[in-house]
Length: 428
Image 1 (cartoon, rainbow, N blue to C red):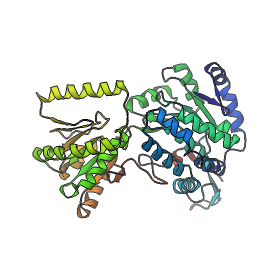
Image 2: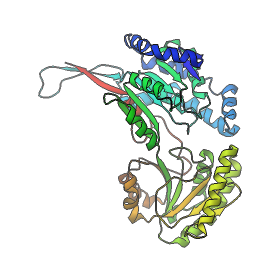
Image 3: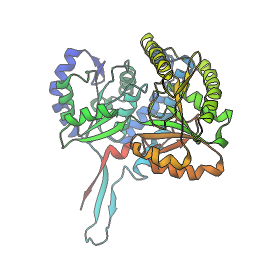
Image 4: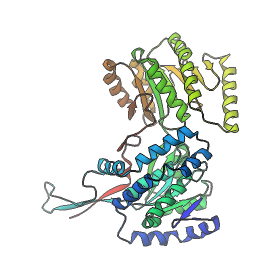
């Protein structure tokens, strides 16, 4: 689905526009620019209509259960609201982000005028693991005043293009700042042309995706990486309550472990495998209970793949030292190693030992891949463990239930996106 000048266009027309896109962008760059107020006004109006039946139906069409779809729309309504976005702008860019700032630096006779300016053109290459992520990435680019070229992921289903089209209908001035293309990542010619047009390429994806883009991008083009991250739970004896554990189980079931801040597995503060196995026997029941509450249909291909993987793992377990606990809709695997790794997802998590004195040793080597930890412990233990986790590279610590939620002004992977999408310009 291609969106150009606020209209959906076919592939033939899209190919022709791509040939002329550089001149269109130069014309836009020669204008006075896009102010944050215009974007905030449009998003705020969109927030009042996004929680409607047509968006609910779009989410249901791509396999999201009704209750979860309603939660997503309620969250989108908040994230697009004026109050949320204005707070985000002030938090990430400072209170006077939209004003010039006169400074008199020490050791310099002349005053300096500084201003926060957009990078120019952002090319967003987004992942399909978060519904409507492409649209939200483009909106962040708009808030920073940039022209945004968006390549839709294969699995996206057109939801982001629909959101952005409505945003343009609300504020037609945004049309020349939003281009959505449905080219395949394998179309090297088209991808190369889009990369050449960008001041920065914004990449959402794993290490392989980022390495591929690095080979394509010229040295004078900035790469802004939002790579795939690993998140997990860390539990001490005092934090092992049913309420806490249900929060983790709920996160696993609601996200199917597809997000960077989804719980992939659980580390227990112990060196005793008996403790791990006892925990698995307890947790599998809680996970199954939550799984029945949060139903989400899986495609037959995914379901077959997961079934095959579990069957293969069960065969391997006969000759290995790990043990699988299965129920109707989920599984928990007790491993003897302390390796940090993704799960096989879709409500199948791992459980491993990790005593506190080994946190740095085990986690630090993964420093740039770690994101969120659900920390379940006593208040007395908390700050000591928190400070250790920060030193390992973890950037966010929450309860189990809130692992995949966010708040106004929250950083992405420990960094503010609007700061990365802007630059500080100065004149003496």
